[in-house]
Every structure is written in C-alpha cells, then in structure tokens.
View 1 (cartoon, rainbow, N blue to C red):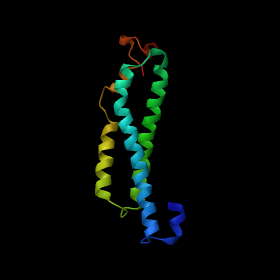
View 2 (cartoon, one colour):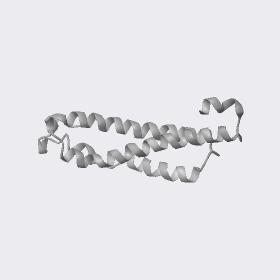
View 3 (tube, rainbow, N blue to C red):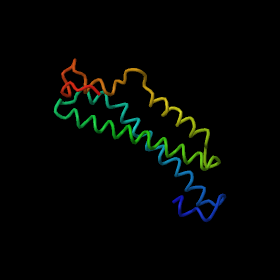
View 4 (tube, rainbow, N blue to C red):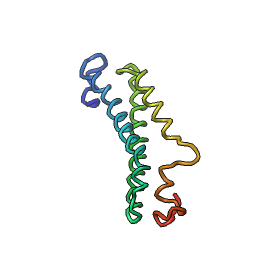
Length: 125
C-alpha cells in the first residue's frame, strides 16, 4: 500500500493511511509474538520431551517475528515521523524493547532445555 501511494505524496488520505498501516501492522505482529512468547513457559512445563525441540524452534520463530516487527515499525516511524500517533507507538515499542532484554536468565529456554529437569535431551541453549 505504501509503495502504491508513493507518487501521490504526503497529505493525501490514502498515503497517510498506508503509512500508518506500515507502522501499525508490524507493531501488531511484534505484540502478537510477544504475547505468545510470554505464554510459552506454561506450555513448556507441559511439554512432552520428544516434541521439546519443535517447541524451541517455534520459540525462535516468535523471537524473530518480535524483532522483525520492531525493526519494521521503527524504520517506518523514522521514514514517516509525522504519520499517525508517534507518542502511542513509541510507548508500545518501548514496552516491546524491554521484553527483548529479559535479563541474565531467560525462563523461556530453561524449561525445555534444562538437563536438571531431564527435558529436551539435556542440550543447553
């Protein structure tokens, strides 16, 4: 939508809406990935050991989705700083950025690949 609206320029409703969506959609993707990642520890606790590696791959894909959504939203916000609601978007982006830095011990990995609990073949992440 943004590429199609490019020749029209700024200030035209279709262009403004396309630019808002170019920020909002990747932000929504990042938020959805974050939500699923936050629920993963409970699933990992119930995980059958033979499928633990599959769950870890899903976790990695969600992490990539979170980072990609953040990157796209931030890049588009830099390209179009006057599009939409930058204050609200910055607050949402800030919350997601904090989620990317869980601290020294990330609980998302510990459940599935901890040799102490005999899951995932004991392979550390």
